[in-house]
Each structure stands twice: as structure tokens, then as C-alpha cells.
Length: 241
Image (cartoon, rainbow, N blue to C red; front, side):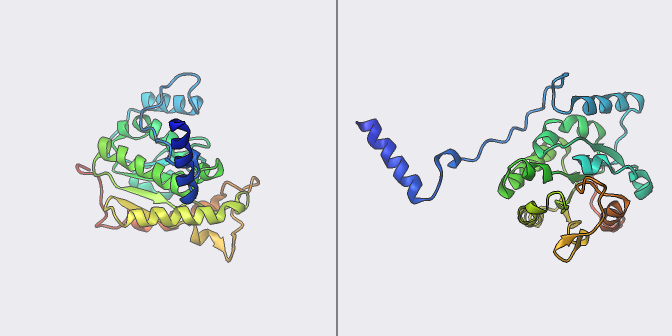
């Protein structure tokens, strides 16, 4: 009877606070490395990074671009940022948790001068809330602090697209949360690529046939937003670079 009374009391408290028992506590965000084997997430793409790093041994102080497929398909990075020795470490339809899990492979071994980060869009599409995405990114920054110290991170805002137009409100809320977080950190720069991609209330026609990934006009918008920041003479870079 005592156990039943306690259950009823907890249930009443959760109801009064409008909190569902299953969401009373946010799930923990793992910052442990993902064990790499043939069954690991995005194994073939991560293996390609291993091969590239053996053929071309990592050198410190490059500008490393990482995140999901919008980074992966940025095939003109070397032409767009010739002065920064850009390295592309985008992979598949990755979420922030997977970027965290592969942090050492993607970033630590390269000791980047700065990190250009694009992820979070797939998290929202998979059902994460804007608050979830913000928490995951904060966890990423915590790992960055531990592994790479004062290396600055440029967060490219979650982009709009026709394929995910129904998620625009959640994307906008996520961007606002990350922008507010960036205002509390000197090593985090929020880059608004979403606004210039919009034509009024709908995205511009800058996508390939899947209406999700961008064509070269889309990447030109990203380059125009990021290039002035990377070329500021007073920009922050990792100590020693």
C-alpha cells in the first residue's frame, strides 16, 4: 500500500507539472568514442578517412569542415577557401552524437586551426527537439574543450530546404538556441546561412533534385557567409597555429 501511495503521489506531481513520466529526465548524451568495426555507423565512410590519413598524414593547423552530408557534398572546398587548407570530414546523414563519437578520427588527429561545423538538421528530422539538438551541440563543445582546447568552432546554422519545409519552425528555434549559446562563448561563432537561403517564406531554388542537398548556388551562399569571417585578421585561431 505504501508503494502504491508513492506511485500515486509521483503521478499526481507529474500531472500537476505537465511533465510526462517518460520525459521527466532528458536522456544522457554519450561522449564516449564509437568503437570502429564493420558494423559501426557509417563504417565505409569512416574507413575512407582512415585510408586518406594514411596516404596523406595529418598536418596540424588546417581548417577542418565536419558534420553531415551538406559538408560531405561540399566538393569545392579547396576552390572556395584556398588560403585555409580546408579538410572535408563530413559523412553521410550523421547526427551530432555521431560527430561526437568519431571526434578523435574527424578532428583530434588533425589538430585544426578552426572547426567548421554543420550538423543538427538530421537530428531534428529523426525526432530530436530543438532543446535536444542544443544539448547535443553543447556536449560536442565540451569534448572540444577537453581534446582541442581553445580551437574556435564556427556553427553553420541549420539550413532550410523544400524537402524538410515542415521542420522550418523547429530549425528556426534550434538556430536561436545555438546563437544564444554562442553569445556566451568566445570560441564559438554562429554563422547564419539560413536567412540568405530564404526567398520570403520559402527557400530559394538552390537544391539538387532531392530538394534537400544544395547545388553550387547554395554553396556559394555558404561561402559568402563564412569567407569574410575566416579572413578577418583578428579572428581567433587555436593556440600554436
